[in-house]
Amino acid sequence: MKLDANQLLTLLTIAETGSVSEAAARLERGQPAISERMRRLTEAVGEPLYRRQSGRIVPTALGKLLLPEIQQLRSKLDDIEKLLERRRSLDSGELRFATTSLIAKYFLPPYLKVFQEAHPRVNIYLKSGVSFWENISVSDLDAFFFEGGMEIPSLPKNFEIIPWITDEIVAILHPEHPLAGKEKFCLGDLADFPLIWREPTSGVRKVLEAALSRLHVRPVRLVEVDDVDSVGAMTKAGMGIGFVDKSVYLQRPDWGLCHHRVTDSSLVWESFLAIPRETLRSRTLTEFLHIVL
Image 1 (cartoon, rainbow, N blue to C red):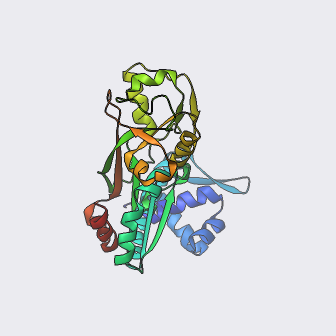
Image 2 (tube, rainbow, N blue to C red):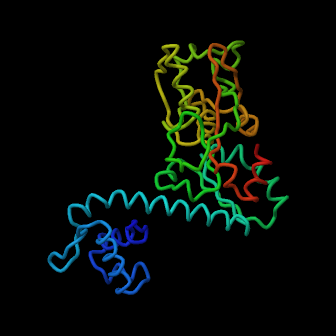
């Protein structure tokens, strides 16, 4: 007799609740149906998978051995259900994205605006910030934007990663900073000046750290902040030298800062897009990708 997925999932629910009646309520089935599933599963396996102990149902040694595998099965089935649900919801007018705050503020808005004008009835849900990723399930999303060098959540097997935007990282300085008027700007010049430093998960910081390490440059003082706007604010206050994507700098003339290209190292910021494979994308997501890519 072949094993049935519903029987295995029922065993997992019984193990989690410790009760056939509670499992039946959770699965929205009658107790006789649940008992019959377990009878058939026990018959297929050839030995008991649970027993009663102190008024509760607990798994046997074999049952305990199977539970982690059944949990993976449930997770995979949940991913499939979410994928199908996402396709249905997209066709009815929803897109769900997650990204870093930098991408959300300075790179995505123009594309979202174009898409909104073309598809005004589609609702867009955008979650940004690395702290949001701690409990994120990428399978719930239609697209996930992230920066190179970052640690990202586990991706479903039906997702693929494609390169998106690359940009130059430039140094930004207060106009009165000693290095502001220098003809050439090198990372080697930074040893004597404080830096405005992004949080450790930042893609810009990852690139800058690697470049400084290659040149054996160790800044004497750091001011660590958690977003690109704070980098601009602290630099504007004259607290040190900041580093941002050139596109960000060009969008913030209100900072009133100077910028320099770095001449002794290539500072390139990269971003990527994780999306379902082509055969699994909805029409709405495909339309959005035509704009974004």
